[in-house]
Image (cartoon, rainbow, N blue to C red):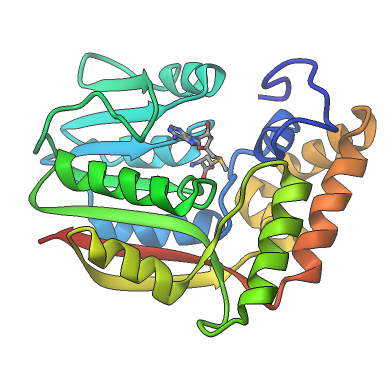
Amino acid sequence: MGTFKGNVDFATIPGHWVLANLGKTVLRPGGIELTRTMLDRLDISSKDAVVEYAPGVGRTAKLTLSRKPYTYTAIEQDQEAAAVVMSYLNGTSQTCVVADARTPPLPDSSATVIYGEAMLTMQPDRLKEQIIREAHRMLQPGGRYAIHEMSLQPNDIPSELKDTIHKDVSKVIRVNARPLTVDEWKGLLEQNGFRVIEVHTAPMHLLRVKRVITDEGVLGTLKIGYRCATRGGAFKRVSAMRQVFMKYEEYLGAVSMIAVKE
Ligand SMILES: C[S@@+](CC[C@H](N)C(=O)[O-])C[C@H]1O[C@@H](n2cnc3c(N)ncnc32)[C@H](O)[C@@H]1O
């Protein structure tokens, strides 16, 4: 994992690939603990046909596979990330498709559980809806859908501040970042055929040392730190991201919602 994406230009690649290149495996705002809560509440079992949107380098995929679902299908648009996920899969009931979550090549009513982490935030609002509607289409009636995304707080955050945060975060991570407030995320799911049954939140501490240790372990954190210090341009980029996250820490959060197809 230390050389994910090979010799990259740290100044220009998306922030999540900067972190993955340094060996970071948890690329979502609420960390592994919010992921564990999400998976526990989804209650994935051997009866479930699971679809994961945008698994990245597959950390959550491993946790899901340890629950031995009936089938597991990942939809990841990045070929190299998909190759990493594929290396964790076995047999014909586990697959990773290189595809866009906006147009997933899976049949209607073919899944009982769908989830995605840190992937809707990076879509414009219209495409967020498209991906949520696709989840609705692929789920059987009563199927469960979960999200784990970046949020803005409080719910009545002034719109100028929201715009500034969108602009500054997008610039530093070099990805369009359009986090919503918790109420807006809930509304988006509800407007697209889901009933939200649980909401869990966590601080957006992606680059805080304590969180990195929780997510990656002490040894993993030391390795990430070493690579960050020694790979040209990495330290500058990570510091810039950390600075912006700290600047807006009061207004940034992480949210996971568990929803049911109505
Ligand atoms: C911030 S990373 C999160 C990865 C992983 N879910 C995690 O939380 O660690 C965003 C991931 O979303 C994927 N992605 C973004 N837009 C996508 C789309 N429209 N279809 C499929 N994958 C997408 C990226 O390739 C990347 O793997």
